[in-house]
Length: 307
Image 1 (cartoon, rainbow, N blue to C red):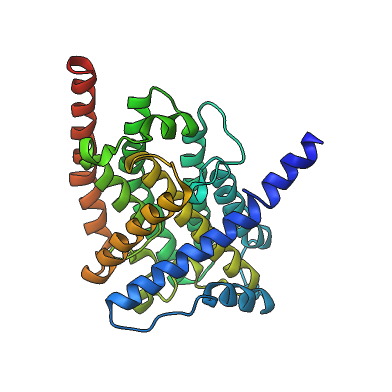
Image 2: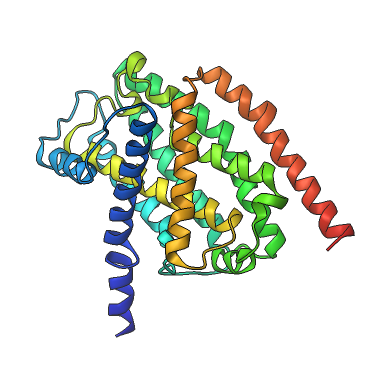
């Protein structure tokens, strides 16, 4: 009986189907908010689902010169990694399907694996736009990943645990945004870099390199990658909100917190123009890393002399 329950948790609720739907909902909200800020109508509520279904119905073209197994397998691995990471995260304030000591480290690693698969997918083709997009994706990954991880580990350090459930229990009612503002800023902007949202969208700059690493993808492969991006968005927003905005608590209130973060992200996208890849790398290594290290030093001093 327990095995059946676990399978249902993984595939339906609060796993698989629930996470995919949540990812599409948050992606739609992001697009809608950005459109409103740019004085556009934006997509209708069903647009994300319609886009995915349309791509799934299209033919998947296999470009010449690619490793077919990698070309087909990488989108599946990317989505599987993102979904597995989300299984340990309280999506939309709902208790996660599973939890164990150290699941935060595993979740961060799996979310990084999603981006790594994206870079490998572009490197697997002979298309120059895909290769350039893959290079930018991997370069950007190695610039923001360390600050983003350290920003999420700050609350974990205060909680004395690497388990997401225990960290959210510690942050319940504690708005670490007020005591660790630098960590919050780095975590939120790092999430934008991970999702390749403006101004960190150089890896998929449509006016320069078409669709970046995904230029050669169509049909099912492209749909799976897009689903993975949605899962990455909702998992990342959940971690930042749960760690810095007073924990999970009431699911409805937590949903409003994550939507509030989306408003901030949409505002940044609307206000700032695209950075060059060298500017992005410089920003993260010069300022992002410095800010999060200052935050860590402050946390250590606070624990040593105040707590």
